[in-house]
Length: 189
Image 1 (cartoon, rainbow, N blue to C red):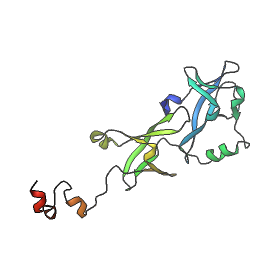
Image 2: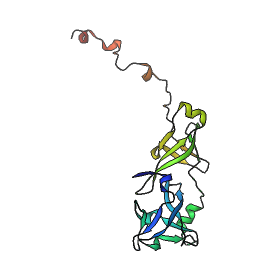
Image 3: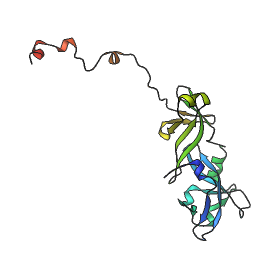
């Protein structure tokens, strides 16, 4: 199921073991190398220290919220979480990131993104444009297959324009027969 990032904020994290709420989701932790949400910060009245829940520990997403096996799924954020700390140290935020195409044309900024609820892969980014461009164009939705590179300063996507090539193949009409192919034998038919 595809969900907007705004639909995944302040979601209850529920324990399957006890049936109680462990906390609620805060900001996502996004790995820019895979463009995937790997964890969420978790806040709640019973949580005293900064804690996270890995998206791999989420069994399902339903009306009750994120369902995890038990309280062990909510982990205290410390130096033992080596791979997660590596991603956190990237300090990557997707919202507000500048989007440019491969011809260096600025398209706008990321206003929202769409997440697949199964693997938490970011499938689409929603680019908001400046006020002047909004009058002429609608907002852009860019699929992850169009993304070329994610850097600290921008997201680079494939250009929507087709490069111009001037060659003989474009000038000649492929449906018109050339004069050399009109031989006396072909005209008799």
